Picture 1 (cartoon, rainbow, N blue to C red):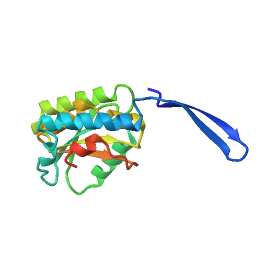
Picture 2: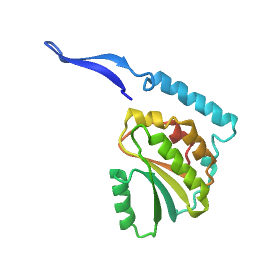
Picture 3: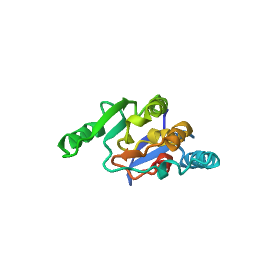
Picture 4: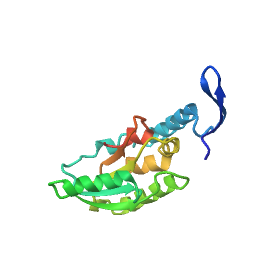
Length: 174
């Protein structure tokens, strides 16, 4: 999906000017907020909006289900920390694209797999790296939010290099 089309021109007084010619409605902030509110309302009507936040998080989590891209820098950093930890932490990687057209379906598919074997894990970690508009849209996905709300173990959204807050950030335990 193309976020926006723009032209960039040299301007004698301002050096550079950027003219946005078109903006995809999928990435328009107002549309994202409308979409988020619709999903919030649906989750509240189902009585599950706060469900994952109520899950107890026994410390330390001993076995994590990790949804991440196998090639992500976040995963590499995470594994380095686990290797250096004095605690024995185990994890199982549920590989999914975090960016791109198939990301939301892959994340939802991995959440379904985890749900089917949830008793094997202490918590779920879903990762994302830097902010990118498409990821914010993916995090407004109703199916992903619903899977998270219904999981009987805590879910953690591991965010890197961003201050953006998404709907998934609202429904997860941590």
